[in-house]
Image (cartoon, rainbow, N blue to C red; front, side, top):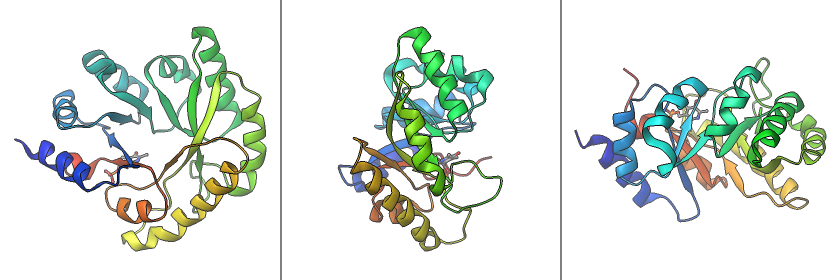
Length: 215
Ligand SMILES: *Cc1c(COP(=O)(O)O)cnc(C)c1O
C-alpha cells in the first residue's frame, strides 16, 4: 500500500538538488497520484487534456501541472487553463494556438520545445536543423515564454543507448542558452533518467519508477 510513497521518497532522496521530478501520471488514479504528492511529488505530468481536467478538479493547484503529451489544437483552450508548463511544443502552429488562448486569459505560458533527437520519421518533436527558425517564431509571441528543451529519444533497450540522444540535446540546450535565458532540460524516463542526469537533464519524467508497471 505504501509502495508509491516508498518509491517517491527513495527517488527524491537520490536526486541531485538541481533536478526536479515530474510524476508522469497518464492512466494513474487520483488516489495513486495523491499518494505520490503526499510523499513529496511537486510536479504532475499529464499526456491527455481530458484526463488532466478530471484530476485537476480533484487535486487542484497543490502541485504544478506539466503537459507532456501531444497537444491537439482543439484542446489548447482547456490546456492553458490547467497547465503551468507545456513541455511538447514542436510547431509554430501549436505555439500560435497556445499564445492566442493565453492572451485571452492573460497568462504567459512557459513552454519547452520538444526535440526529435532520434531524427525519426513520424515522431513528435522538431528536428534540430529546424530549431533556430522555430525559436525565432516563438520569440514573436507575447504570451509564450521559451523555458527550455525536452526530448524523448527513440525507444531503446538499455539506458546507456540513450546517452547519445541526451548528449546531442544538451548541446542544443547550451547553444540556445548562450543567446536566450532558458532553464529547463527535460530528459529521462524511468529506465533512462540516471543517464539523462549525467548528461545534463534538470527535469526528469518518471511514471513506472513511481507507480509500477501499467496494469
Ligand atoms: C509516460 C511518459 C513518461 C514516463 O515513462 P516511464 O517509462 O513510465 O517512466 C515520460 N515522458 C512522457 C512524455 C511520457 O508519455
